[in-house]
Length: 427
Image 1 (cartoon, rainbow, N blue to C red):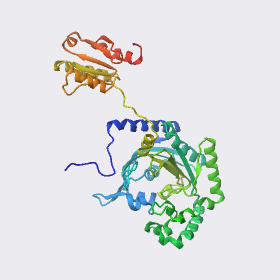
Image 2: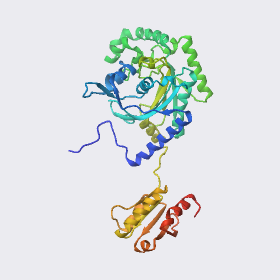
Image 3: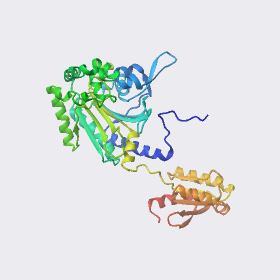
Image 4: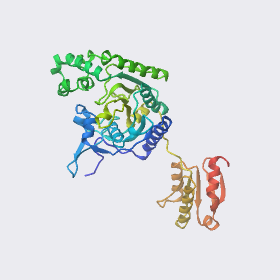
């Protein structure tokens, strides 16, 4: 019996890793420009963190978490999302005491959810997210959205759609909650068991149901935007004004509901409109969570953030036929005519690498013809062949593969000669 990768997971092979690295490099570059600093939290946390932070009524907590009991009889969970862990760290390490607020953080790493695997959605996935904690100014909301859009645009995606909504403050949400209960109650028995449970606990979650999304009551459900009080409406108007000032186009969707309980005020999603992307078009989502820090034991510290799946980012690039992360070409391939030359070739390769020149050689004992074919496959810019004569004279030819020209150079000067060629000082 062969052992295979667990369902819902996958291997990133070398020919794909370059794409991941290119995307991650661009993300880190943008975070530096926006002054977001990296935070790394544990892959597993106390289960209670996600029960309190994400919400007991969410599908994530009820159905999708990987939880286990350790040898100390503690319930632990592989993190299903990043915000709760970051906020836990913000509180535990007293980052609210730093002089510069908001504290602007980003994370990138694996998350785990037990859900049905499909294109761009797996049980282990890599998520990039940012959190800006410590400011309730609407300009921060616009900045967070702008950073998310910049990630996609900078990598070459064009078929994007930004959808925003306001979930309002507590007063607004309570008024909307009462309206939802009145709306759904007469026919709640037509909905799935989860929705029936949510009616009293959190009726807003009904709007996010995948099972009953085509039920006619969904289309006529009262919109939260109609229940925003004056303060919430003013806040939402300011967010829209800041987005307009950045020339970021958006669509307001009154039915947009994020799948986590901690959101309030601004909520947003970025969709892909690329042909062939599939039914689930969301690339990224986020919003404001002004009460989460207090829920996890910290002082009043409003926050906002977003998260995006790197897998879905790469899928969108594939759908739009955008190529990133081409494999790096090899600078020098050192071939040998016989085993006696291998020690000198090995030292020469090491010297190239020590001088910042990518170099490789044969380790399989192939004949010279096969070695040169390997150099071609690796797209080597230069090749060097060592044999008895070259070892005796301590010099060899550097062949430029593009032109076929060969220059004889002493071993001691090899690295400098290749550097000059790479820089264009020598043709």
